[in-house]
Image (cartoon, rainbow, N blue to C red; front, side, top):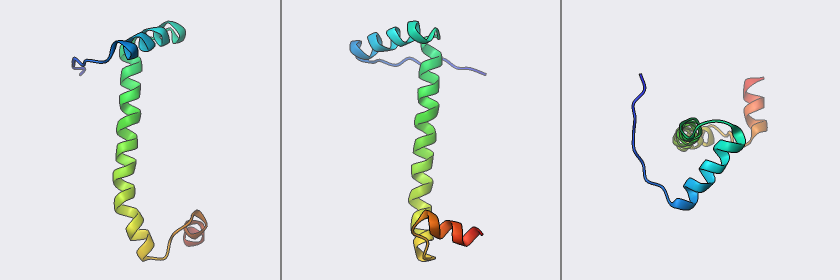
Length: 72
């Protein structure tokens, strides 16, 4: 179920958003929804990374190669 929220943005951002909606032929809500999804995913990644990097370092895992060696 969708819910509506109201946000305020600077005029310059709204102008860029409106220009993008015309170029991409999508509505504002679609663009804002996708931007928010990406932001939330990045924040979740950063949260998990903050927890997991110290754990990996305790186990001597510092690089992608270290990870590869552990899983292969």
